[in-house]
Image (cartoon, rainbow, N blue to C red):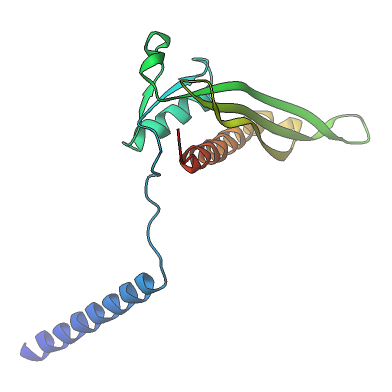
Length: 176
């Protein structure tokens, strides 16, 4: 019985030492988990339509950081340090491939998001920026329902990518 205990203790010590070595190696190379970004402002007014899924995800992402208050009520716009104006939020779907009988074989999905950031004085902190994501999607008519689900998933992925790009650009603003 003591032989089993000694062997278990040796294994757990070895595991502990290996874990400590891996942690020391990772910290020595500069690795650390991504933190919520720091913003040069503490309040932001986001002017976006209620039906915009991208705008809603952006607001949730900003609020989720815990470092900025998102104001959406136009009556409180004067309380915001900066104003994010969404100039455009557009989804596009175009046919890029047909088969020999003229049936659609491939679509290209695009998501465009255009915005600018300004302070209360009207000075542009980020001038008009258009972000574009696009994905190609094959299409088979016999799998139309599955392809519709795939299309929604691709749009959601593109939307998340654009939201992350906007958040990084907002975090890069140094002075308001």
